[in-house]
Length: 72
Ligand code: FES
Image 1: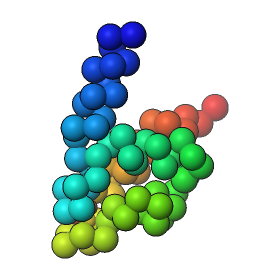
Image 2 (image 1 turned 90 degrees about the vertical axis):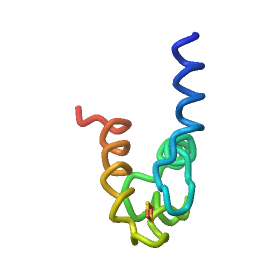
Image 3 (image 1 turned 30 degrees about the vertical axis):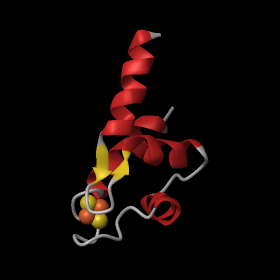
Image 4 (image 1 turned 60 degrees about the vertical axis):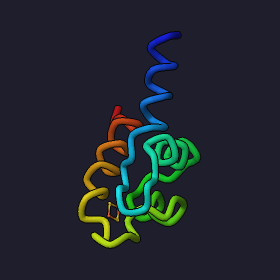
């Protein structure tokens, strides 16, 4: 329980897309809602449209997609 709260808090505080100040919680929410590709996550959150054109956040988004969609 406490672990989940800490994780939720960290997800809110950690910015995945620094250019657009988009927190990890928003990226995870998009993935939970079915965004299973980088493009879909970018489209629904606005991540990747900042000054670096997604250079910094794309690898982190891909990692989250992989973590949350394990291949069975
Ligand atoms: S960090 Fe996401 S567009 Fe730059």
